[in-house]
Image 1 (tube, one colour):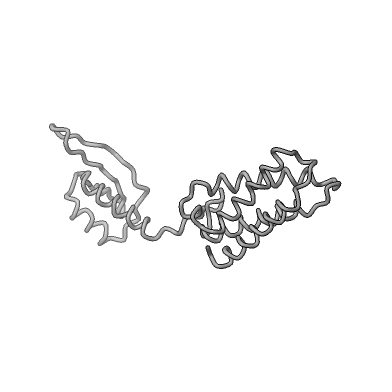
Image 2 (tube, rainbow, N blue to C red):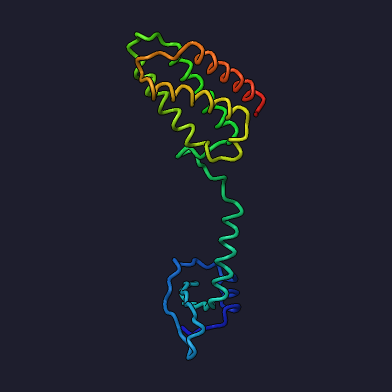
Length: 192
């Protein structure tokens, strides 16, 4: 089979109902300057062999066009696998409400409860995770709800770190923490 110009080869393939076999790279030709290479693709067209030669530039243009087409129709990425999904505002409000609920549950437990130690450990973990997640986020730290929750969590964590899990939170400190949470919930409901 002899080599034809690419335009006449493509026209011959398009004119006859061609069944193109899987594309195979038959050879890469190198010119003297090694600046240009050609890729030979063989296709069968009604029992005769047709070779099409494509330059590197044409391959690059076609590849870029295919990449642009794929990028234009790609779906929205799903980031929910590792907790990166959803709206940042909604996620902040949900996590903050969860932390507030856990701390309230822990503070409402009687001192002689069997689940007090486990609840305090869960509160510590949620507090540390919440603070680590939002401490360096400038869009969150300036909010009134963040300041109120952070202050309350700091008071609760400081108490348990200094006095242990056996000594109950003093009533005055507990009232202040609950007031901070109420103020934070109002701010959260307003999106602040």
